[in-house]
Image (cartoon, rainbow, N blue to C red; front, side, top):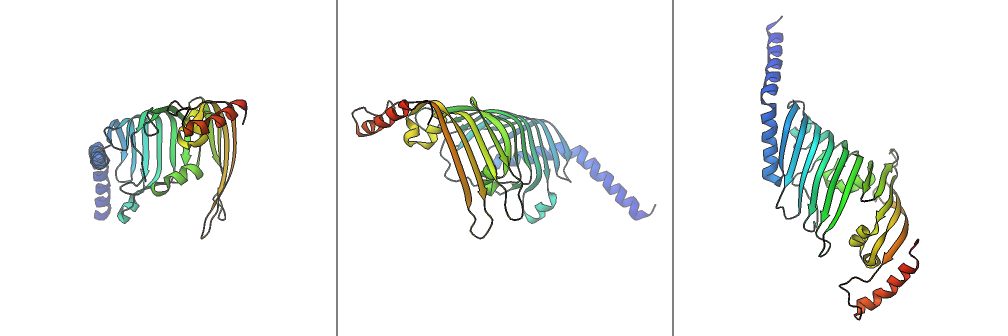
Length: 287
């Protein structure tokens, strides 16, 4: 064996030994920097992987963010696995080949309006997977009474998931299924081609109308009970001036409406709302 081959073999052994000895400490250091930048405290029970290849697997993970002006959360994750593109770091980019979250539990609270989501540093996840999620979501920004709902995701996949286009990717580049309160929903999409990014379909069934009214306002704010079935088909176009063609099919069932208590029956708004309430209640079976 030549001296060069011996040196390369010895170097590989040293790298493996360094990874074995310092991987967990390196991971904790990286996560402590995340806490200083974003206020997110991350702890884990066990870690394995390779800091040189970018593969990291954390088990029994907790993520906490308290006293934040925008949102607060307390999550527990059974397993978090990521595969980072290490070559992208040389270009000062954060690219994950894959990120998979399994067994997510906890609570999320929105405490103020977010005018625009803008992460400190953009990132791209080529393949994002969330499996077995069950969290309680609370929104305190929609009026005097907080809105709370249980959100279950059996599975959610997004290919890709980009921080700068996060809403677009979830709406038009994802697949999944889950339960929101008593209702179920399914997200599907056709395969993309060179000429089209594919068609996405959201199908929502038996979702409580109270949740819709809190966010849409107008006549929906008068609804006190009922459920809805909603199908949304959308197909973005590719080109210099891209568009999104959408088709909505909304059915409302067993709806009940009433004038909110903070509206005076003798006031202008109360008088305008009462005919709408009467019409909704007269057609409560299906709209």
